[in-house]
Length: 122
Image (cartoon, rainbow, N blue to C red):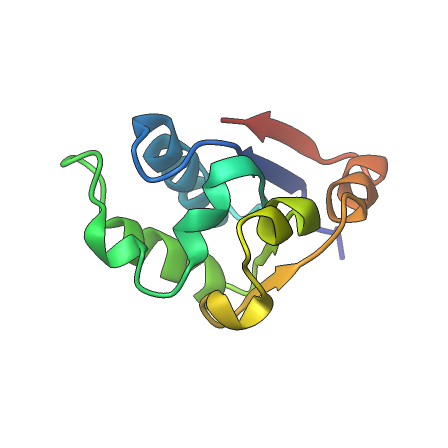
């Protein structure tokens, strides 16, 4: 059996930037296309997965809600990792994030890249 092709989506923008909704939308499209999707959040993008944050944002009226897009990623077993220094500088720990999100180092990106993953950054 062939292993799924991999896609890593690196999100750098937070709750106030429409590029973030594009990133989550593309990640969901990758899931629908059968890709093994991983998300890595850096800088203020870590705010997307703080408990309660996504409920307040709906950046693109043509997309599903941000909460629904993030939950779909989790429900499909995709990894959502948060940059450790980015969480620490904001005073966040894993308990501040929704279930299914982990604080992970850059190897979360490097491993799938070494396996041939495509990487998209927003």
